[in-house]
Image 1 (cartoon, helix red, strand yellow):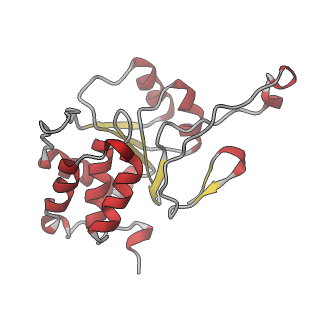
Image 2 (cartoon, helix red, strand yellow; image 1 turned 90 degrees about the horizontal axis):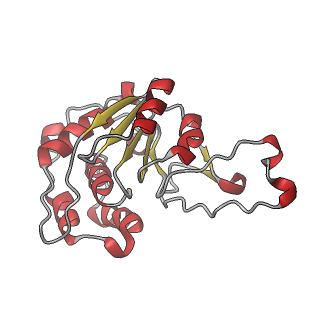
Length: 201
């Protein structure tokens, strides 16, 4: 699956770097964007695999872009209630919301609930929920942990998992998150179907 970004650039599943769109430059003659709708990805948006995306919290400026993905589901990893505008967008587009409230704690007081991560992964692994978006507030820590644990299921080596995590978390990378991913036990989940592109041989 391909996602078209700004200036017509196409992002493949292998391009795991977050999209950081520059604000569109407008002139007086270009205020109507020539009748074209702007598609603005959410903060830290990227494709994880076929039918699976990640990002920071989407707002109304991102709704047209999300609509273009044809999402069936959103996994929301924050404990706060979903905003009314976002709920209206979900209803209007037939998108199902799965909320797994994980507190956004700072080190050294980080408590990542393993069972909650497992529940979120079960939603990701069910292809009936695809296409789906995983997001938290900034698309860094909580989202990074879910994606990192998914990568373990896909048999990625730890150095690649950590590299991807750090690409999104940048200077805010947490040793505790990486330790959690390292110790996360996927043995009980291996019976689940993994039909994503990266795991096909």
